[in-house]
Length: 192
Image 1 (tube, rainbow, N blue to C red):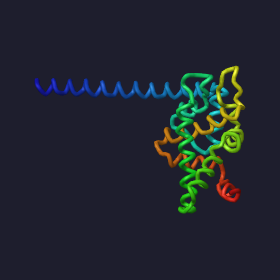
Image 2 (cartoon, rainbow, N blue to C red; image 1 turned 180 degrees about the vertical axis):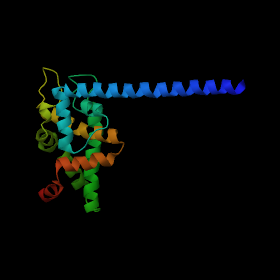
Image 3 (cartoon, helix red, strand yellow; image 1 turned 45 degrees about the horizontal axis):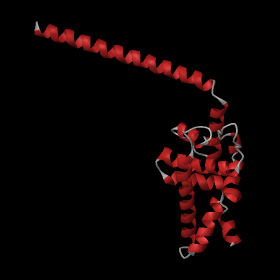
Image 4 (spheres, rainbow, N blue to C red; image 1 turned 90 degrees about the vertical axis):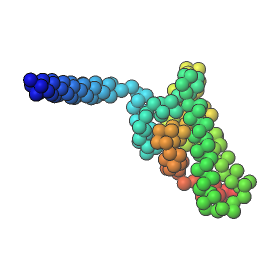
């Protein structure tokens, strides 16, 4: 009698497990079909974010970070301010690393000048943002001009803060920065 009870319990357990797996696979199928339908009706903003990822050569695991990077404070309280600050430090560190690797004896005055040139809102940062077409992507309030240099620059910097946050590696953000910014570091040195 004990063995019959064990067999019935085992049969019930197997039936339950098979039922769970078959229902979860149908849920996965339903979720995939739902996601496909949602993706086919994506917004222009989602399309712009996808295009931006292609332009910069980095695919976000968490696209919400890029969405936030492209959201100005005038548009939402969930905006790019913190990511922009982080991105500024990443850009400054990447410039420092590049020039110190080339010349460890570089003067602090020259290094500070080089960092300022790359970080300058009007001469560099906003131009890079403009080249990426960020004025068409950054979400701002109706009263705010998205082509404003400071807004473009903040969005540009926020991209790199978002990349570092997404990957957990500042190196990924630095590599992407130089890919997007271009190797104009040599041109900056010749200007001094």
